[in-house]
Image 1 (tube, helix red, strand yellow):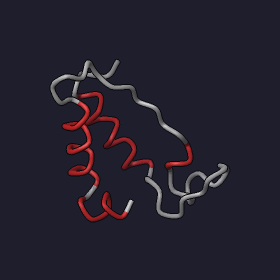
Image 2 (cartoon, rainbow, N blue to C red):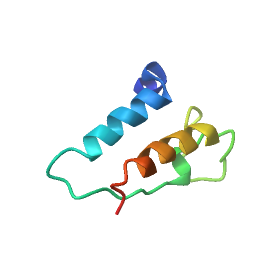
Image 3 (cartoon, rainbow, N blue to C red):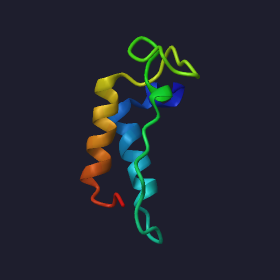
Image 4 (cartoon, rainbow, N blue to C red):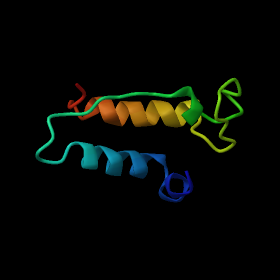
Length: 72
């Protein structure tokens, strides 16, 4: 999360999608674990993250991932 915060969510998402869509890969799967969300919006999880993703950040990541058109 420190790196994501330093880069900003859009840059971090773009870099992650570039990695997932590199040549030689057929596509990627999207799996969202509620533990990745900020403890303020999702406290009822096994592994709490005080600085996890906000709902808006999750939406940003998902938009970039889906726009890549490589989700399988």
